[in-house]
Length: 187
Image 1: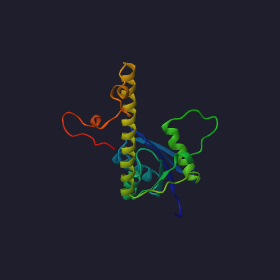
Image 2 (image 1 turned 90 degrees about the vertical axis):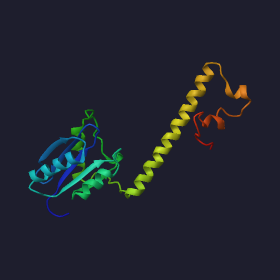
Image 3 (image 1 turned 30 degrees about the horizontal axis):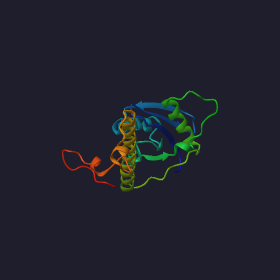
Image 4 (image 1 turned 60 degrees about the vertical axis):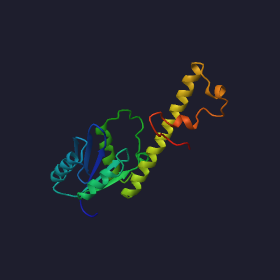
């Protein structure tokens, strides 16, 4: 991009989006906040663009639970948006105060100075597949946690399934079926 550009860092949060726009040429900084919705963010970005005389905005936010959906939405509305790697964000020594407003300002500053690593966005289908796999992994982990919890609870109460049933495992096929109908199948 040639000419004047305003860099915007957005701290994405469940409660509120905090943003900071930085005009690198003049050093002017403009902070904003909005509800965590696309409509609210677009409204604020439009105000920022108008404030700076209609110059193009380069927007970035830290990779998080939002994934790349916000980036796709902003780009479909004409904003150049990039997702940056959290591990690439420099941490200033001795700075223990950390707020969303400060994080947004630092994102804008680091982005304007080229200090952030941009994450290559996957296409929507690949991102959906990743989400599905992560959800499955999480459910498997929860299932294992519940198994261990139940086995510990039974042992604390003097019930030893393996010993009483001469089984090699605590979990057998009949544990995966409910009495109300078909349940899980054994792996």
